[in-house]
Amino acid sequence: MSAPPSPSSPRPRPRRPGRAHGPGHLIGAYGLLALTALLVLIFSLALPRTFPTLDTVDSILSNQSIPAVLALAAMVPIVTGAFDLSIGYGLGLTHVTVLQLVVHDGWPWPLACLAVIVGGAVVGVLNGVIVVFGRIDSFIATLGTGSMMYAVTGWITDGGRIVPGPQGLPAAFTDLYDSTFLGLPVPAFYVLALAVVLWTVLERLPLGRYLYVVGSNPRAADLVGIPTRRYTVYAFTTSGLIVGFAGVLLAAQQQIGNPSVGLDYLLPAFVGALLGSTAIKPGRPNAIGTVVAVAVLAVGLTGIGQLGADFWTVPLFYGGTLLLAVGLAGYAARRRMRTGAFAARGSPTVPPRSPSSSTQDGGTAGTTP
Image 1 (tube, rainbow, N blue to C red):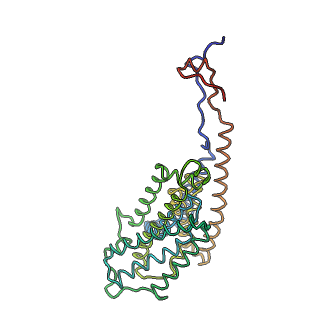
Image 2: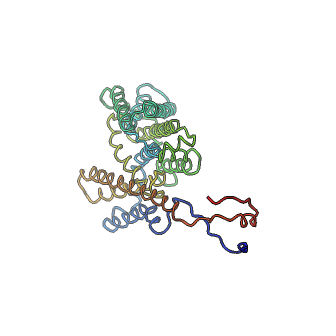
Image 3: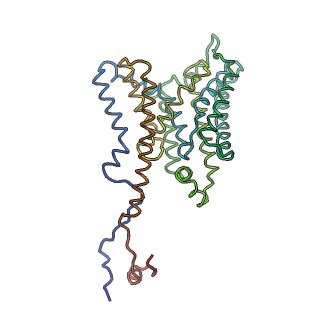
């Protein structure tokens, strides 16, 4: 009879499946942060008088706040494997609606802002219901609802712009965008707070874990009892809520209702959301990665603009970055799946214990699988 194993002998600890290790994981997770620092260094050396200044920092934090908020709005449905193409149209509709209610209908600006944000959430619910219960692909469904929102925007504005009277808009309303806090533009703190909330919900709460399961394997989610339809509607509702908030910020920034301005933010939002899925948590959309991606885009565009590049470089930059983001996101997702499969098959695990060793450890005897 063999002697039982010594209690002091180390037993191999199981590795968690799907967890990446080594420098490759660090590069994938923090590569965009390194790229941001590299771009800052390059443009600072190339433009020492204009780029490394507080004015440039204020400009980036202020001008990129709305694209960052909209990118976070696009990111939430992507978590569930869906795409909301209506966010650009929704941004246009919400910002002209705020100005319509304040300028022409005489609503108090806080009530108008609240109504628009709630209305954005309602539109998100409708998008989710159409996608999951109508069983229409999210691309087609949200493109259709976005076109309808664009029609409503044209009906509200009658094809023109909403211009405030000689007295202008209430100062408290415009301060939502124009004010500063701790010496920095206050919109940057909106982005930070929103990113922290979304990160906490997606990474630390059961709701976020369910959303990720729905996006990665909806059939498995159904098998374990997760109501995939309900959580998909939740994701679209959150997206619509954030779009409503972005519309309020855009109205406070522009101070003029332009029915077509929202479409200019659609491509940057998806570039930020998709590129963000390659950072911090490679292979999965995440809030902090989205903010980092927007920072990379902001630094790149600001540097290119200060170098005197032509206007057509902006859509070229966004289009090329979108293709790169989709390719990198797909590669990161496939790498994550391969890493998880390899870890599940080849990582050292606790060997099956014999009945004698189980009894020796104080457990119950079991059978070897």
